[in-house]
Amino acid sequence: MGPACLKDHQNLDVPPHPHIGLSTLTYLLDGAIFHRDSLGNEIEIKPGEVNWMTTGKGVVHSERTPEYLRNKDSFLHGFQIWIGLPKHLEQSEPSFHHINQEKIPTWEEKGIYYKLIAGEIKTKKSPVPVHSPLYFLEIKTETPKIINIGDKLFGEVGMYVLEGTVKIENKDYGSKQLLIAKKATLCEFETNGKTTLYLFGGEPFDEERFMFWNFVHSDKSILEQAKENWKIQNLDAFPKIPGDNKEFVPLPNLKKNKNRN
Image (cartoon, rainbow, N blue to C red; front, side, top):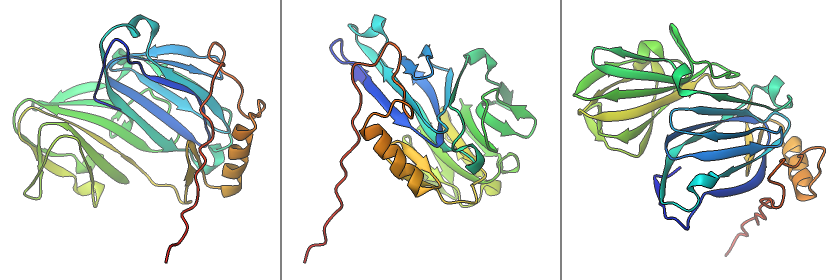
């Protein structure tokens, strides 16, 4: 999300909306977001902290600019990554965890700075309660470095270059680019100096996942039921959010494209 400069009359206001079948990992680089959900959680997320919401069979949440920033110029930049749940947890009870910045593992090796935001690699483990083998790793350098981290990674992996440049197989890739590795175990690259990048990956599931809007599931019939439940505002499936229940994001009306001659 972002980077976005919000003037004193602009605010982030994502009204109550539903999710099923996934976990959301929210991690900010700048700014602040106030999270509310149908479980009763109310918390502000700030840079360096992690919001980990497991939706399971269904949860509703909203994301807004905190009250103290709503009449001020502000800046917002960060990630929200959606992570599918293992099949046996797709219909589990929803849950929410907030992890403070000081609990996130950080370390330095030969002038390379690491932060394991979520998951596990080798001897390092984040306290974020993930549900499948994965990793979300920040890497920073101040001077040019050759980084060979393939022996620590597994499964599928993507790289997001936030700032600076990385060289891979004699090709340079700049900031705001997303790269997908052909093979995680061959992950080697060179930074050009002051660089920040993120690696996110893990073991893929055996079953295919399907997606409609905010709903993710391995069973299309569950997706259809979630659509109907939100459309009719079934409170048993999607309860209201305490303190934020005066509006909601309606179900999108996605029309199928018609073939044209």
